[in-house]
Image 1 (tube, helix red, strand yellow):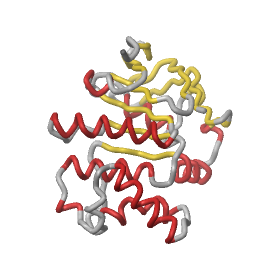
Image 2 (image 1 turned 90 degrees about the vertical axis):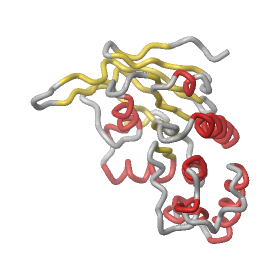
Image 3 (image 1 turned 45 degrees about the horizontal axis):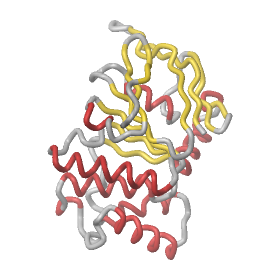
Image 4 (image 1 turned 180 degrees about the vertical axis):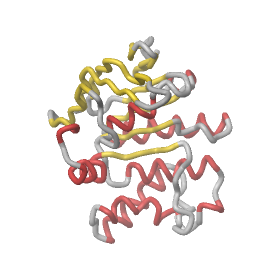
Length: 225
């Protein structure tokens, strides 16, 4: 599904540096992988390139053989809207929408009918154990609950790729453990492919396989037991 070939990215200016060097890997449907690395090493930059939010200096990001770097911004926006889901550290739940409305947002953007939206939202809220909170506002939820809403929203439009950028960075250890297990379970159940970016070894252990990002590039870590 996703092939990354010899990806390189540098930033210019007073603190010019090369962030990513010769990154290559493949991701198939059903894969759930983690990319580990220290803060500032370039993990979020890598996600931005994979999602077409930024463009590499060299190398390719191929989605079903199509080079994302060769597409214009409108085409990339459409791919993200239809084929990608995102879970962020800071939740990014809209405060003036209910839980159900937040989850339904990607469906609405893709023109889904109301009946499908209601059915899909209900199924996802059940999956993330928030079936009774659809009418709640974000201010009425705990951090762990808000991240579960974010997972449901990321999966609402049945994306083929799910990107999770430090999704437990703002959670207590117990909530983090629950969210990581739920994220893996939901991505697998949907038949999507997932990439979890994290600095946490405990979080990385929930993935099928782990890569470690360093200044020298990307290497494989020990496989998940």
